[in-house]
Image 1 (cartoon, rainbow, N blue to C red):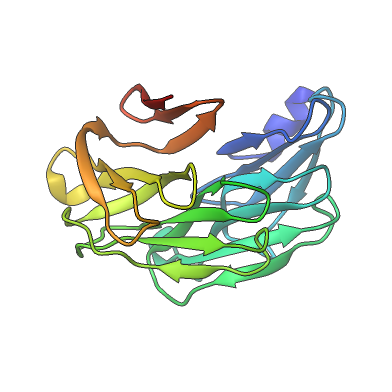
Image 2 (tube, rainbow, N blue to C red):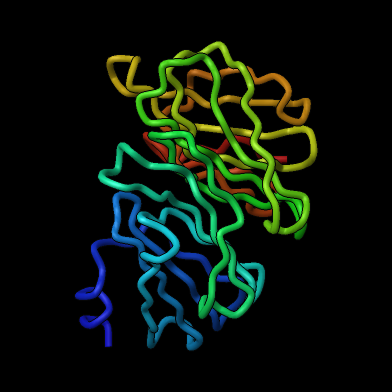
Length: 229
């Protein structure tokens, strides 16, 4: 029942559903890492501990009822010691395989977005970023392997959180910026497949970006519509 689920967890950062029956969730971004699944539209849930794979769990994305991904990080002593990591399952979360891990410190694999069944992106939040670049991951094989991208941008201190590409060329990344005084990070936009990015300061602190039909929604300081065709 519901009270047992809430008692087992410290928090939920992501809920995702590939169909009307199956619902998946995970959390939390500061740890501990847990995975939840339901096969009856959320009436009953099973919960598993992910600590052998991840110290923190941020986002989950399932292609169908069996194959899915979870982002997060692995650390030795504290959250600020995080190394970004991504895990993948093909059996509904019974077993997981770590498909990405970096030795970089103070980084967390954050949000997942797929353009089609093969091509997807994961933002990497660099905690207290001091550089004028940001990082994200790209896959072209449904999350089995990932390549890291690190484009230069005009905003120093940007910590990527929300990410979404709507096709091969056009993509959006949002996040926060601890160097800005207000912690406001601006939306970064690419129209050439991630080679160069241009900021749009009217969109602030974007943590999730989703394409729904012909529109692209972003949640941050408020709910934004980035694009409507």
